[in-house]
Image (cartoon, rainbow, N blue to C red; front, side, top):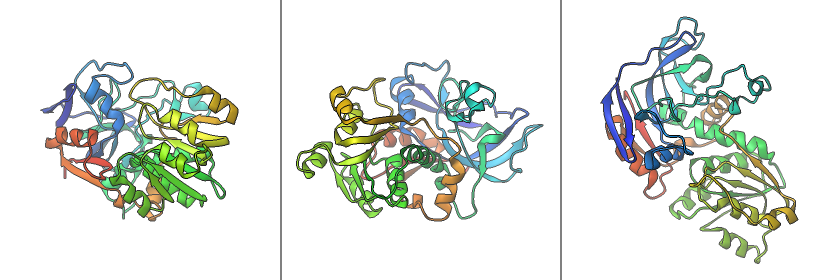
Length: 342
């Protein structure tokens, strides 16, 4: 099969590799669309992910959709030819956390595109049968790939327990931030404030119902008369090094912070006195749990307008260009998407 491998930082090459063979409990998926997640930037730019260095030139990509091409001997997944989206956090089902239902933080989780499991930027990928979900007829392959980051947003919003009366600050208007905005609107919150330095993304956020968009946290705080009581719920999803500290500052006393972001460096700093005096509740949110089906339904019913999320599309042969676009997206582009076997 043809695939895109990352041989070194910013060195992606199109090469041939043997077709994967599904294990007994796996299905083989012929990939159709791969949305490039900023978490893949770590290996692409730095050659490692949170200090874990791949032991081979890796195939990246974990937000993807495709068609079932073959079934393992004992796989009970969808029939060959079924269009599917894939949950990429592959849990073991046997550890103590899995038995408590916490499959997204499984002690033995396998995650394609994280060392050392190859991802989906290839013509084929083998996946556990339990991880594939049938795509509704009215949902395209690209939107089905975007169900993965939408699922991350669904999981984070579940943690937040938002509803009428809440004022929500969303720090970062990338794909997950925009998805959280749409989910917040569905939850009938009182106000949604977007903080995003990329001004081109403000137009989309406002179109999708944001109350107001700001270039930085200082502008938001100034709008509220210089007080740090702008919102009672803040989602940190900007991938900026200081965004966690910003979330602490915009929250009012007794507020809630949901942290989804992966900062460039593997640490967060914030003013402890601010968080303590406000008695803030801080919840980290890891990937998603049992959210892909809900995400697909939200897209299918039009409750989340994923087809309107700006994207740039590339072929598998131009995957290197797709990564450059993802790292430095033009205009209001949210995701670079690679079309495979199109």
